[in-house]
Amino acid sequence: MIGIDIGGANLKVVDDTGMHIHYCPLWQGAPLAELLEPYAEPAAVVMSGELADCFASKIEGIRWIVGTVRAAIPDAAFYGTDAAFHTRPVPALAAANWLASADYLREEYADAVLLDVGSTTADIIPLNCFESLKGLTDTRRLQKQYLLYTGMLRTNVATLLSAVTLDGTVTPVSTEYFAASADAHLVLGQIAPEDYICPAPDNGEKTRDAALRRLARVVCADLDEIGRDGATQIARQFWETQRTLIARAVGRALFRSGAGRVITAGIGADLFARELGGVTLEGEIGEVSDALPAYAVREVALRQRACD
View 1 (cartoon, rainbow, N blue to C red):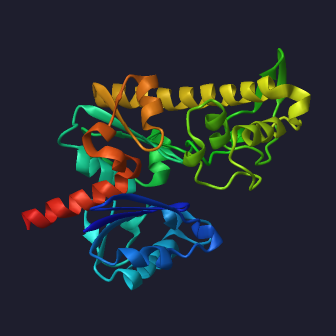
View 2 (cartoon, rainbow, N blue to C red):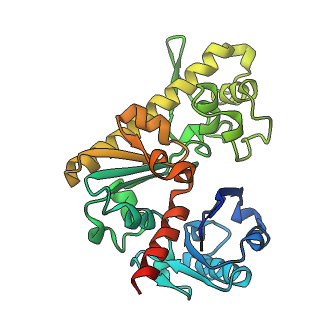
């Protein structure tokens, strides 16, 4: 059996050989069926791609994803926010990937809060209250601050920064999509160029120099106007804001749940484990922790099969 996580931007597959991540922007007509063809074996599937704005509604997205997956992999079952598997497109399938992770981890890590920082979002999941997590929509998770729309790669820098300080001067930023979180993290050495798997905002190179140029544009400047130090300051101020936002939400989840530790997953696992004094799941399950929902839904399905 394989595990599949279909997001709006990325397709993640976990099989016996490990983890496979494909850039798959559904809103641009990415060939999901073709990408799935090499994985034609029984599959457990989660999704969040139904929210892509190429669909008029979430249920339309669910129907399309279920139909596309089952055309490529007839023996596919889909995990929902009711913690059950389905073979038909039902509303409960919307954005259930995080719950699959909680389902897999909740017994062994009942004293922990899971922080899964991906390319686009951060999921903050207290693992000692699984029953109360069932049925939560992304809207409710946003309200509870269990879901933060900020990630390691695809976040527009201007969504977190309204202004930066350059040479002691408060400088408002442009809200154009000039630079992404990947640019800030690349400049600060928090990701490697090969981790920058999404297109750059200008579709340009994914080098430190190119990232610095994009960051300079955030204040409507060329790099020769504010210098490398100025662009690096923008990266640092973005990171400080992002780190504070995520750390506060994790702190709230720890306090409310009574959990005593933090475990981390996703592309930001190592970075946030260091920042928050947590531990990464990589030591337990290996590199597939970067695709935790895909791994988790596979394990949950296998566990249920063993109990049947």
